[in-house]
Amino acid sequence: MDFFSNLELGFQTALNPWNLLYCFVGCLLGTAVGVLPGLGPVATIAMLLPLTFSLSPDTAMIMLAGIYYGAQYGSSTTAILINLPGEAGSIVTAIDGYEMAKQGRAGQALAVAALGSFFAGTVATLILALFAPVLAGFALKFGPAEYFSLMVLGLVASVTLASGSLLKAFAMIVLGLLLGLVGTDVESGTLRYTFGIPSLADGLDFVALSMGVFGINEIIFNIEHEQKRNVIVRKVSKLMLTAAELKGVIAPVLRGTGIGTVLGILPGGGAVLASFAAYAVESRVSKNRSQFGKGAIQGVAAPESANNAGAQTSFIPMLTLGIPSNPVMAMMIGALVIQGITPGPNVATEQPALFWGLIASMWVGNLMLVLLNLPLIGIWVRMLMVPYHYLAPAIVAICCIGAYSVYNDSFSIYTMALFGLVGYILIKLDFEPAPLLLGFVLGPMLEENLRRAMVLSRGDPTVFLTRPGSLMLIVLAAILLVLVLLPSIRSKREEAFQE
Image 1 (cartoon, one colour):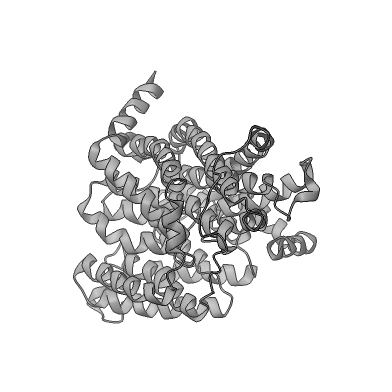
Image 2 (cartoon, one colour):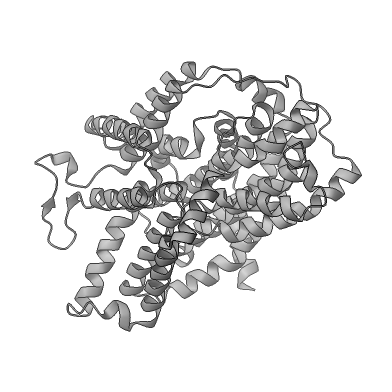
């Protein structure tokens, strides 16, 4: 009974006219940034974080969530029409989607991507509604030792699931943790690593850092590597699927939804892994295996379903445990902190309208996205023709305004510019910036729970091994680390990411 009453509260919040408007704005913006290759939801959310100050917490989170799952929808459009995915999760979609477009079947490819995404998003949101409160209730029993061990597990998982060098991913985590130490010590009130700069007394500005690493960095990189967008389809028609096509994609959509629902919860970009895994599974079990890579509609249905299911279920660890599973969820946690809300299991009990309103808004948003993506295909095609060097100055201006507006301090702009340069250098050296942001967000919480656990145990470090919950999490982290360091598994991991 509580479930249905909570769901009723959620829909009351989501269907509030103001929240409905911002859900639409989020979905529209998300689709647009998904369509424009090189921008992406991380940079967009980073730019829009300052705007959330004037919004209520539920409205802000509903809009930001709409941007995230809207980008998953929009990125499939560029993957199919110009073979240039707007998001990493749509890389696999481009393989068969672009072939379908070249064969004059772009309409069917876009239709199956939208419908598969809608179904997957709906199912994943139902999973979120059913299991997130249970997990939150379980997490309420956690003490400081368990939270510390949980964050260690999250950081280890984000490293093992990051593409590229393990050593470089570890280095990014450590750098993020160190950056999180800048500011005032919570226990003693002593300034740390501020170098006499008053603006650093409260720590590095999360908005400026994230906009620099993911916004300015992306702009520089994309201007340098601006790709010619060869739009082979100027007008999209035949958006309806035949009965045979519809029957043929049911199983791939179901399999993709199941894979995405599970993998989306994993830290380190589970939604992206889900699309690759779904395509790999489908290419082996499908009756139409010989057509994969040549325009198989199943090759579009499975990864798109997995990608969107993973995007929805990635909210589960963020909402229930306060642990970000990817950089976008780190941004969402930053938005909650800005609103004065401590992320974690208490959100469900202390902010039920926010918790359930966000879940209900995902159903509403998924329906909006189907209505946005298919009828407005013509507009998205025209957007693809805008050269990126025309968009870049406007994006930089928005970033500067956003960074300044947080504290009305020009130091934030300098911080953003510095980390934009740092992010660009990291990309050039093949370092992934995503683990850096996860380390930066989790660093202060990791330190706080470590010190609290040590105080409660009177300085006994074995507290992390004597409490069963903490021990289990530490053992899981150790097993994960050992497995990924084994030569055979490590070589297979590198081979998988290369593919």
